[in-house]
Length: 153
Image (cartoon, rainbow, N blue to C red; front, side, top):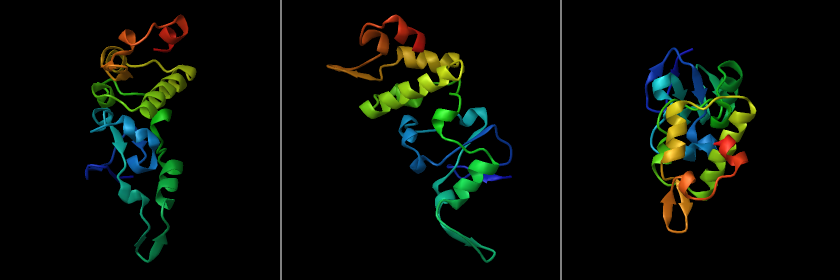
């Protein structure tokens, strides 16, 4: 089934389908662009949320998203694997809420036994995204990491 992504491109083949940003609180982790785009993931545009009428058939607000969840496997960020790419949110400071979302996502991935891709993990470990008293720093320079957190990261 062809889909139109958030950038207006038509995609016929894909690996995963991401829900539109305005459906997800997790979208704040993707600051400027979809890091999964090069890995054949499709980020749906908000047009899929709108109520519409085609060929005399009316579809209520959000019904098409429900259909895509069921039949195409559209899902939200915490239920997919991270890309093997730099993570744009880690290139810039995150809000406190997004810090916890990111850590929650990593914990969910670890619980499911998903290994974090090398470039993604490097970005999380080395980039200055965690807020400290005087600006932003990488987690390794922000606090003493105990063995349980070291395993998580």
